[in-house]
Image (cartoon, rainbow, N blue to C red; front, side):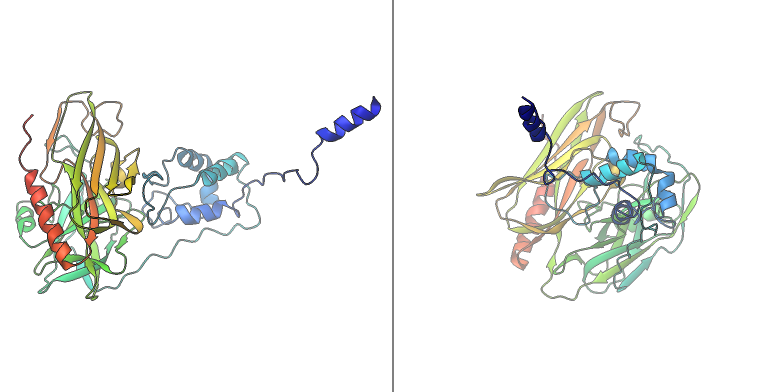
Length: 435
């Protein structure tokens, strides 16, 4: 009996090989500093776009519970896309392990570890200063938002920067330089040769004008965006944004008032490409021009287009307000089936940006592209700009709901075909559908 009990007791004990090592408590030296360095300090430093610095041990430890809370909830760092879509460049999102490490570090009393040195601010990407465009005079940004005639906050202002280019240009990279990084959240770009933006400027006192930077059917954001966490937008080698001769750069600024008057006199730097084989990047605009939703209404809107040419997808730029709570873009590829290109389950308009792919992705001719937007005209939608609620009836030439797909065709012939097709598609949307 004693022998049997001894055997049973021995069996119940774990052997040394099976024993697991104790879980190591996270410290500032490992891995918290590295997490801050990779995901946070590009904005959270003394001269950055964020309201406070997270570079030193003391700075992070002082806000440890707050940092743990906003990272656990996925509020920070701002990275709306889920992992369903294609791989994206400059991924800012934290992994589950990184979020857990921050929480465990805060709960353990913020141990320092073996190394207290601060997180290093990543070197800012630099581009060649082939063209430097600066605002001629400062624009006085208001201290607070004001409601406009459409019951929306006036959180955008459009500026016209003449290029004075006698010939066409191939732009590969754009950099935005501002003295008020905490206020200038997102900058959207396109170029124009019609002088319509100059006419709009002349109707407004001072530099720039309100309203979207769209020009007829050319949407702002056609040349991508820059903003918080990424003041440089660079296309991959072999791709460029084409600019016609005698054009102007249209810079639409989405700003967030700081509570005090600010003087905005920003600069845009362009890097040009001389590569004769470089491919022009165009946009395919998936959009709903008209939306009509009653008080309390929730509806999913969709738009689809079948592309006539094979293209390389470079990136995607959503263009929609806080009435949208989620969006998704899919591609039904001939012979392959349906794939998700971009999925944003919790859309936040404060983080407007171009989501550039990690590498261009081929979409063959005949691919059916579909975008869907979930729109909630409810008080429960915390980002709804139309409160108090009213019937939501909107129309816009380039889409009340929109997402721009930045694509390049295979050659000049296909590029011409794609451009002509897209013009006809945009024109077809100008007539309101009969119920």
